[in-house]
Image 1 (cartoon, one colour):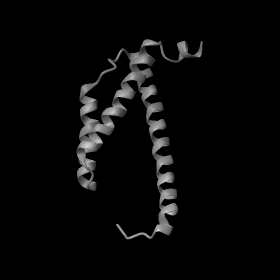
Image 2: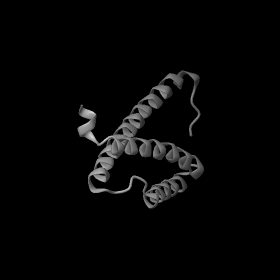
Image 3: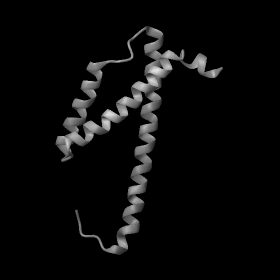
Image 4: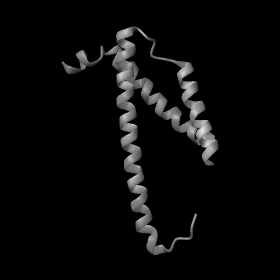
Length: 104
């Protein structure tokens, strides 16, 4: 990390805002894909909760954290929040009958 002058703060915040925009779009896209997964599960009778998949996602995040000097516990908590929202959306999607019920 380099030493930045106070004059660089607006530029750094602009960079952070750009990264945040990409992050938020990635979260939106992730949730959209999860609804498609929820539809697959609904149509094929697959249980919403898949503990082995959650474990695989958390393991991948932990490996990423270790490779990049990020606290694995932080990414675990972050994924806990995202997975909880994913499960909520999928459960709502499955219980609500998918796109046919939403359209009405």
